Image (cartoon, rainbow, N blue to C red):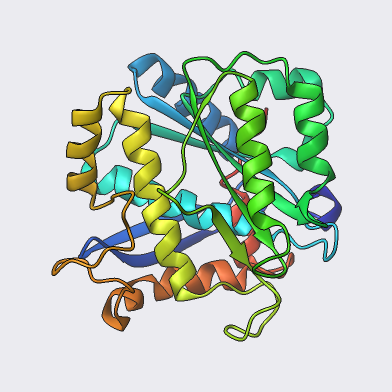
Amino acid sequence: MIKQWGRKAVITLLSVVIFVGGSVCSLAIEAGSDAVIETRAADQRADGRSGKKQVVFISLAPSPYTNRHDCMRAGFGIYILLRNHIKQFKLPISLSYYDGSEFFQDQGAIAKVLSLGNVYVMGGSTWGQGPAFYARRFFEIGGESNLMGSSATAWATSGGAHTGGAEVVHSMLRSMMGMGANAFTLGQKYMVFTTDERLNPTTPGAFSRFDMWYMDQFARMIAVQALADGDRIKAQRLGVRLGVSPFYFKSTDSKPFPPPPEVLDRYDALLALINSSAKPDSKSWKSLTALLSVP
């Protein structure tokens, strides 16, 4: 849990420049205090009244093996990329991100968070061949929330490529479906990121540029699903506008697959931020966790 890692009320400003869709986006990340968090909560309430679609991220981690928050860090990558698209394309979407490990056994807090969203983006870590305790307990306690009319998707982190990460995503999506939500993914791909048993990168807890590319495709798909309102024509038009499709693996002249180095180069700044946040005493981690909301 973040509290165990000594989260402090520190105020800094981290500027990250990344390329999105061929253009440059400058991202300012506020590091937080109670005042910053309360301001963000007020903004969220105002967004709800303005008719913006609410996308709620919930990370149910850390890893029971390493105690690292790789899952939350992957979520920050998706969150930041989605926030950049919201700014670039002027999308009527509001974001919030919650550390579920802080309230996964609090029925009232779970019910409150699960009352906020039009789209829920769930993150979990792997234990054995399935979800770790945080996710299991979250759904055991909060499973009576009625999510009809909302959508849900999920991501997971795992030590290796075939160690249960897909089952984590599958289980969380099935749980959300059981509560009434409509589930979606990035086409046929479950969003699983391996952070240990891999040849490149070799650093434990590190992500790759290809991981960032997948996070970007996932962020764009979340935006499409949030705004389409079940309208297939509207969804397809949004997909063209945002440059995403369920068939991400099909090469075109404008979007080759796998993405060439010049495309992956665009994610270097964000990758450096996410990878440098692996240490809980790093400025990057403190800056990222200041983006979190509280129930």
